[in-house]
Image (tube, rainbow, N blue to C red; front, side):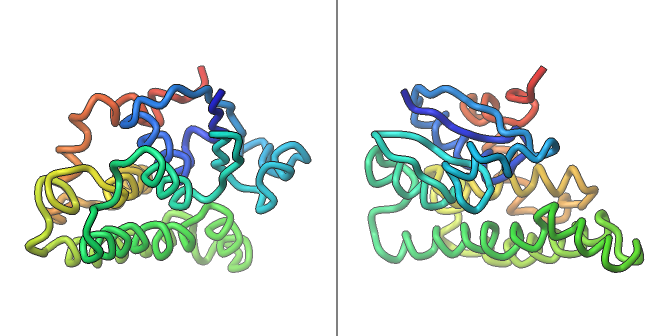
Length: 208
């Protein structure tokens, strides 16, 4: 049985949920409550030595890091990267702009540390708004490109879209105004209309 160890509000976990939903991959969800620090328990550390989520147990493997998981799903089931090298490079660049530039610096543990070390002079919300806002503004420029179609790259959902939607969810959560980002706003509206994307939304998987 495929198992996804995840936290409902984790943007990295959200990416993998989207991928599994689009593939209609049967799996069970195992919650790891980050608020209760369950990511630091011996059980989770045995699965994921970084003390993070998600972990996907699939095909007899235990996989960590959301983009590595999505690439594995692409390689074994298909669907998330273009066939041509130029397209693959572009999708990876768009994905990395979110997952390797915006996300790490806007991780809650980073924001909390900054707030604590500055005695509240830098607030969590202010930190998030600055770096999410700047990161998405740069991504908007990257999407102003002939290869952008209905979605981030052409007219097929790719790994870049799986990264974009959770990041915009976080932007909305922290009060970052994305309405002026026309490419991002249009693509997010297209993605939100896909039933599999709605099923993977944090509000749909939040523990009752």
